[in-house]
Amino acid sequence: MSGPGAQAGVWAPNPVQRVDWSNQAWSNDPAGDCNSALIAHLLAMLAGILGVGIFYALTKERSQFVRHHATEALNFTITLMIVTFVVPLGLFMLIGGAMLVLGERAAVGSFFGFFLIFPVVGVVSLAALILPIMAMMAAGRGEWYRYPAIFRFVSGPIEPHSG
Image (cartoon, rainbow, N blue to C red):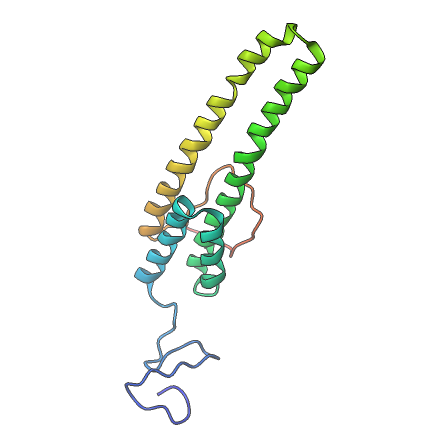
C-alpha cells in the first residue's frame, strides 16, 4: 500500500517517493533502462532531432542512465544537423567565392574543390550510421557510452566513476 486508502494489488503511485504500490521505484528496472537507452539511439538514426528531442523530454526524469543516453543521442543529432547543413554550405561558398574572385583561373581549382564535398558527406554519413549502432550496442549491455567528437549542447548527468 502506498497512499492513504490504497488497496493491496491496486496500482497507486506515490509521487513524492516515486514508488508504486509494491514499493518499487519507477526507474528501478535495469533491463527497462537499457531498452529505453537503446531506443534513444535508435531514434537518433530513424527520427532525427525531433524524435530524440521528444524522447528526451519524456524520459529525462526516469533514471540517470536513460537521461545520459538520451542526452548523448540528442547532442549527436544536434551536431549531425549542424555538420550536415553548415559544412556543405561553407564549401559551396568557398568554391563560389574563389570563382568570383579569381575568374576563369579558379574554374579548374573549383572543380577539384567541389570534390571535397563528397568525402566530407561520406564521412558524415558513415558516422551517422555507425556511431548510433555502437551506442545502441553499449546501451543494450548497460554501458555508459559517449559519442566521440560531438558538441555537448545539452548537459546530462554525471556518469559514474569506474574503478
